[in-house]
Picture 1 (cartoon, one colour):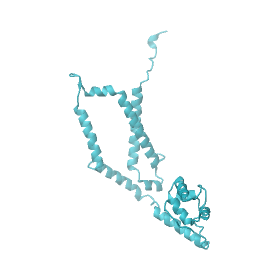
Picture 2 (picture 1 turned 45 degrees about the vertical axis):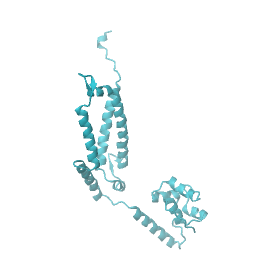
Picture 3 (picture 1 turned 60 degrees about the horizontal axis):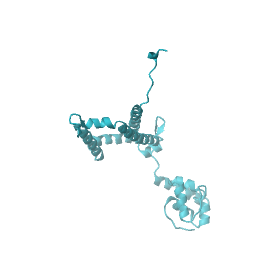
Picture 4 (picture 1 turned 60 degrees about the vertical axis):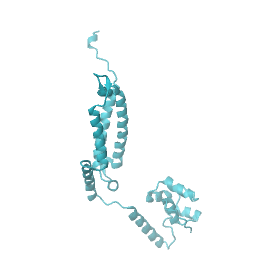
Length: 237
């Protein structure tokens, strides 16, 4: 058998793996960063169901955050694997000593300058951020205005008042809702709502109806809703 034609055996190289992974993580951060830079603000993105490449803003934020952590970890690994070459940049081979090189000092100063300039919105960093805000605002002109908390609360109270009026003031407007439904309306985690009820001596689960809780606890239905929402109330029937 002619060994001269044998294919050379591949040797696994960790430096190559880390370098390529760091490259792809950096590209993912670059793409997701550009998307978030031009994406509409949260309330507009939510109300308009904004998506790009099938992902909503929250998903793009998750991609950017996770790859940020991955990139940081890979950067540390890359630094560890290349520690000796890095020290070689600082070593004066003639004198065989380590000294501060101009390249390191300039890199450090540039990093500080970018950080301070960004924090203080100094040109050109502030200009870039202003441009990003103007891009975000262009989405707002064509989007449906989101319902504010005050508008939603007023609408809910109006609907409850009309229902109570139609039923002869029986006060069952809030009573027909479950704890989970009230938590969703008020933007409160169900677990927090149940905890607040328990703190007031009201045993409940997510499917418990407000009328049932009001009858068993002596609180008015509206007071039970206030407790769930974190608006402390002591009003009893």
